Length: 345
Ligand code: BDP
Image 1 (cartoon, protein in one colour):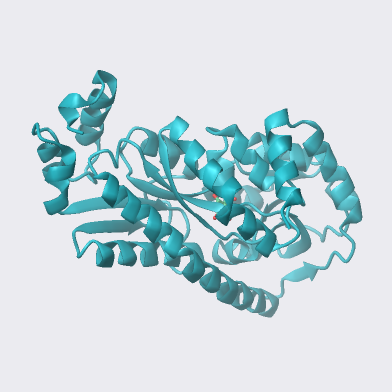
Image 2: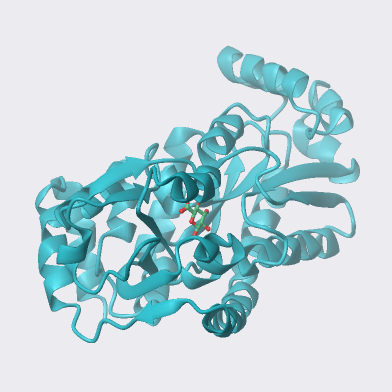
């Protein structure tokens, strides 16, 4: 489709995005203006896409972004280059999603929690104690449910490209170890900017505070929050353990990561190239999961060396029964997906 044949609003948004986005290829987009079609134009033009990542470059998720970029480059014969911007240099996740929506960023790897604000049905995938284990989650993500939900992000101006592993999330605290849910009562805990995550923390009797990821360290330092929650790799790479050295292995949720394109940012690409991106993202999953497993072990041993106290939770029963309240608040469409997930053997 040529830009001239796009609906007026989309074409305008695309032009605004071009003006705002140094990452978009002027050449490809200029050619998109030529009647005759974007497809014909972009096949030969070189394309540069900007990918936003909030994690540091050595985090397994960021390493997978680089692998994705490598695959895209190789498979497009060097024609499509994905430049990966790590360490939140393009902004925190809420801002990254806004920039993706208007095309200032072409691709991003974000947490499903952040994205679910735009596509509430995605909350089904991060419900507490939902999956039996990581394999169960991957069966869901790689199957019909994962495919349907990835496609559903189109309604919010995104192109769902693929999923990444993000382990199990656990609570960590700065002053003393939290051994049972009663230790959380009255505590202030940072959560992602997502209502379901707030509901979960509230179900344990704590006060949820939604804050951007980049603000956690100082919020722990000043005592604005008593703790936060995340997976082991992120707890380690963010260095939050330096001020919050108690990590409780309650495993309350598995929140997958998602690789997203911008509908506007990728509008100048051919359908074939968009497919190439999606296949490359899917083909990066095995690499990412292996990198994750390896880094998780390394992070755990480094954390132990640093004196972090890991609090084992042999019986998650009391945690699970409180977390059930989060399910009571869910609309029927989410509960229907949850039922399908649970039935998947
Ligand atoms: C990490 C995710 C990152 C989230 C962060 C958070 O990789 O995308 O933004 O958690 O808690 O595990 O905000």
